Length: 179
Image (cartoon, rainbow, N blue to C red; front, side, top):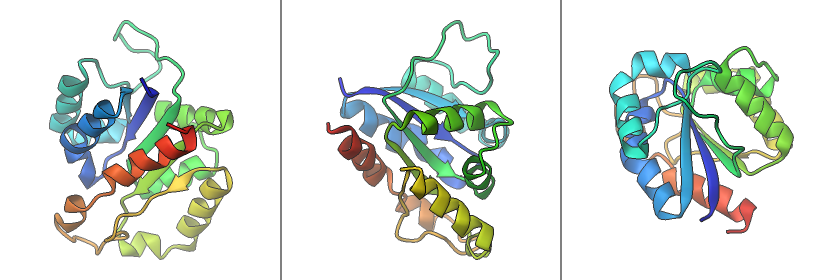
């Protein structure tokens, strides 16, 4: 087994493909996968969250105080994908005002392999705050993995979903872990 992998999802288009694209590939590589999701991801993509739970055979964690009946183990690696503008900026600023952001701040402090794949449009990406946030995450040792169409055009349809960098994310954390 490669270890415990946290997959963190936010309310962005590729969330709809996590259960079919990322999770099977991670499990095929031997990861024991746990999924954490933002409240907004659950609200916007309820079908995707249900599919993730079916694929993993366990609930998606969205809060500290849940009724899922188990505590999460410490992860050996984390993938944040897809990552929204808000999540990236708040995480880089050290804001821990939600379950997901608190867990990301904590894992960043543990210096374990973490890879993030942004999913933002060109208007958000042009904001200098966003560039500074990506730089701050990289300075903390986090790999920023962009797909070939990222940032994408506003209202760009499904094109970025078809080429989202699932495998490069897995390659990133595996390489840092040495597995």
